[in-house]
Image 1 (cartoon, rainbow, N blue to C red):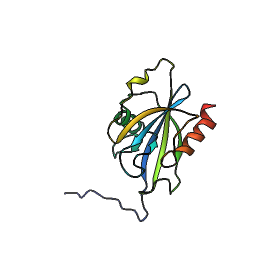
Image 2: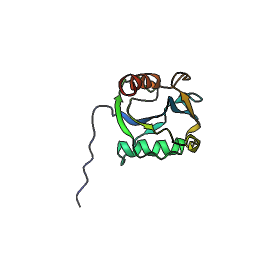
Image 3: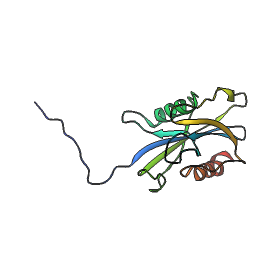
Image 4: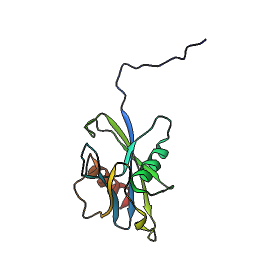
Length: 146
């Protein structure tokens, strides 16, 4: 019987996550974190990539779990990789986005999973954000949304 090879590496492996920016008119969807770190703070919806999942699948799954929204037309924006962006461990996030049509029904949004609340905020009136999500939104607005 052949033994299956297991590969081990001498260097640490970062976690991979996705975050999602949803824009509707001049508002962005944020979730209030139900767990540490940053429990009670607002953040972009998102979470960790599972082992057998594409990044696109992770983004769609996390968005649906945390906001009940099923958005199939997410586009990739940018990766953020500051080693200190998450206090738990090294996390590289790939940010996806969608700009929703004017007739999108915002009332379909409902918090779930590890989100205590989901709410639309005007881009000009954002609360303090967890992690580096203020930087993420600032870069998105500067390079993609203006």
